[in-house]
Length: 477
Ligand code: ADP
Image (cartoon, rainbow, N blue to C red; front, side, top):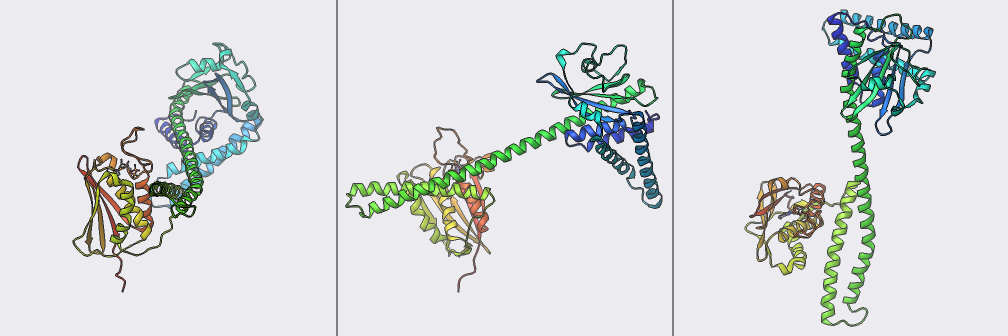
């Protein structure tokens, strides 16, 4: 172990810290820890081994082995690394001498230093026969004796110095030479792996000091490992969620496509019947056909809404044509559609007209659909005999259109959520109000496409106020 003095130890600590911080995948983590262990300037072991523990099968399996296959190879490897380190150190000294500023060179140097080791070691990995053999190794924990190297380490709380006399190697003979140091890597999930390092081709002794530094690496490595596992878990979860989201979008779009075709036929045939193209109909039959027609149209608009959401989610766009639109005319076209659906409820929808209402820059059919959803909600959540008002208010170049109801209202926390699709404040199966929870999502998408805005104010128990804002259009000549 090269680290002797306090300041040297600090540098070593810093290097371990920086290097371990670089790992975001398990493979990288193994490589970084192993490279530090065989680094002649830090830990200086000849070889380092990881044995990953699988709690489910109770087996240890060889994960990675680094090091030389012979004394000559070890010497050459060591000299190469030392030479590389020396060259880097020289470069850093030159920069430090010639640069007037005391840059944070030391950490940069350490970082490069370690990434270089890693490159070197990665290059070596393929050529090392030892590595291949070790990868295939598998030892069952329940077949190991108490004296077995792995069992001893798995049960010890700290790093241990293993010697020939008290330790069995059963199954590890071709790989691990004793004396060696070993310790366990632990995460919140339990025993993760066992780390072993030996000094096959070095003459330095393995003593208490080595053990102390090794333990210290284990502590740091366990924390780093925990982070790596968390990052990997997070990545896996994100990937899974993205996949689920994609499936949902595909599902929605297929289903709504398939629903649209038969619906169009139903609407067409009902129309033919109502027009007596297939023979005379009685008044009662006409009334029933009108209702079928209304319900089918409603179903069709729901299917179209879902399809639109699915298309936008899949990266598509809503087709709109921006032009000067009369907001009052669009409202008057929409009101009968709501009444057809809500007629029985006796909630009046009334525009408040005090001033001249300017034209706005929008898309007429998009604006009608926006009105439709907001009015449909306003009527739905307002008790019978109540009133829904639509107020217009011009403020310079903008027109505010407020849909005001005296219904059940929305709490502050729910206000943030109602624009998410399929979100309903009351989502119980036996909920009191119908709907799919997509009306406001469609409103949001349409507004984004035509460049309008929406805000909501609401008091639970008193009612809600959904305010649309559009730019005023230049009056047509
Ligand atoms: P839904 O089809 O359920 O009406 P929306 O996306 O249009 O779907 O609305 C989502 C939810 O927001 C509704 O289920 C309801 O809980 C709440 N909401 C929307 N508008 C109003 C309103 N005017 N008054 C009270 N709650 C409302």
